[in-house]
Length: 447
Ligand code: GLN
Image (cartoon, rainbow, N blue to C red; front, side, top):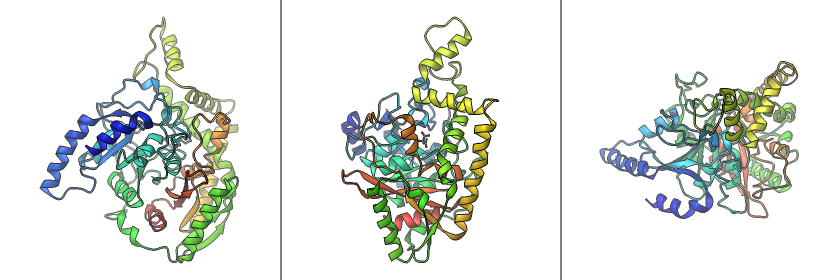
């Protein structure tokens, strides 16, 4: 009830939630109470939480903050939500996001942007901006977001919270509305690393409804790894991650690296030359997959349909023209272009080949390093309606996060001080595939 009161008070300004589910929350809380009385309740039983609006919830609005999905209520639950529900989770609502998770500020939401609780003149980051804002403002204990190229980690860094993008395949994507299927992954946003470990434990695992998910044996609980120190751990620092980074951020991350070294970690200076190609590779692959994934919104099967039309073709064209926002249209066009017969070899195929090269570089680096440490973003939060920025300028700000999705490895963003304006800075810890344990361990030690 305290969370509901806080949401009623603060959400009209912060716009972190776009759909509220208080009736369901109150009922779930009663059931959780019962589970707790009976004893042996799971750790998340009764804990109030939020879901990004691209995670399907049976009978509850799931719109991806797009006009084209207005009124859409799925008739099934995403696996992550099914799992949490069984564990007694209390869903307060669905959180704001960039339309179809395309963006880095959450300003492409059809419901208007959420505001950064640390300073409401600034964006939350994106695309899981509402999920980060809700946790930051204590309007939920934890939330789930999705990360295709940084959408959990970058808003976590802008709002000063923790955000974990798990290994590709560690968490089922069943019921996550697809953006770039080979890159998308669900993960937690929390106020502490320990919470991130608990939530990840609660949602991970293989799922026969997602053929790319893996039932990896992490042992009984990832919270066990948190108590270890960093002595002897090999921490990789790649200079490519620090090129073009705001000097204030660079120096804070360097201080953090020095602290880890002081505590017995071994710093390895390594190179990742293919990193400079990660951004174009990401935007080609993400847009290509998005253009295919978004083909299903035709006004027939889901959500919005245009009011008047005289043929099916006109209906589809008008529905898509009216239903999608500018950024989504830009990406569908880019994606269709790079997949077209005349340009496939020059763009899409080349991007897939370079993706392999980036993966090989990461594999090689992890033979000599346990984790990599890097900034989460080259900048702190942008001001709202940042007019100086072209779409490309915003794309460039994803440089530190997209390589991680291309390689499918896990990474966390943890708060690492503030800049001169008082805006939070995020440090990113990147690990080997399925080695969330070491990522969480280093993050918890630093926190
Ligand atoms: N900012 C990136 C993009 O717009 C990442 C988004 C995401 O991870 N969903 O594609």
